[in-house]
Length: 366
Image (cartoon, rainbow, N blue to C red; front, side, top):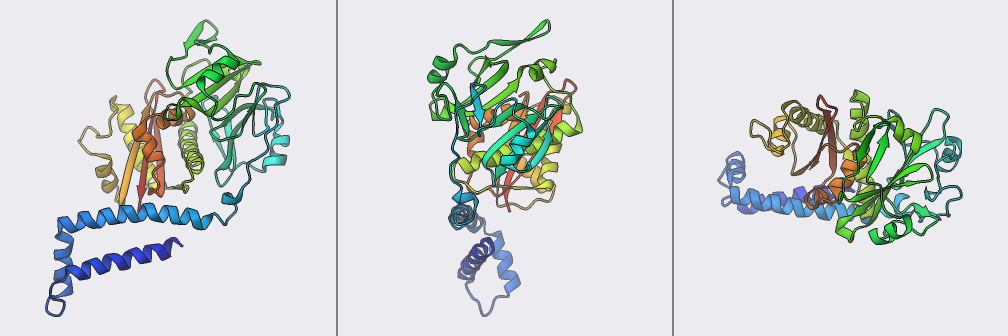
């Protein structure tokens, strides 16, 4: 379908080019194409047409894909938790991996997280998206979702207001004690942390949707307390884990907003990694690097051909989850995540000497 629509676009652009050829019988094709390409006004017009076409293409593809399995998925029936206040897709802390995979199947991806354990992600074309963390005995010790899969014994679910959450769960934590150190929870950061049933529950709010619940993370107490430092230990496995997790969460957010999923791109991942590494090594945080190159300059330098592109940056968030939820609460970054015209994404992460992560997301359309 995409190839057919692109063919229509090519024919349309050729028609525009032909219109600009004043004397088709006497002027050589090579010369006319050269003149055509040098027309700045025409290039701007073509770019505008192409961007509009990409947006239309994305919407058309979504409509055609609705006949396939992801578009026809029914909303799951969520049951009230039996042992905890919260569950995610009817999974609670303490559930066994065998029980999870009996209903969910094999994970789509397994990747390292900041707790030196793995997130196992389960979804169907990024619908019904959850991340599950297991301990050494294969019991669930962590859960995350940014979709309508949250159930609770107190009536809190996706879309609940911040007032309802605090009314039902009480005052959020101001800090988490680990040994002799208290790690402060920032105020007005777009999330609350609650200590419930020997677990730390982080409720994320969408400030662009009247501060309603948009995601939840649940971490078993012993797992949280075992992480003695604020940041995870930097490693190649954690870097890759954060990168893939951001990609997966981005697509999970896009399907919530009825947008087509993005394709992972290894080449643009390297571009993103180089910028994150440069920022980490040289202690700056900016879309333009120290040589004055913009994100678009850096993409072109790496021989990436694109018709539209965008970049998101984040710094200092303790994990990919906090980075993603923070980006969704920043309008410019949110617009990139939810841009219908983008087709590809590469994510690059780097750590500085203090293990502080730098995140770069490069979106583009070929």
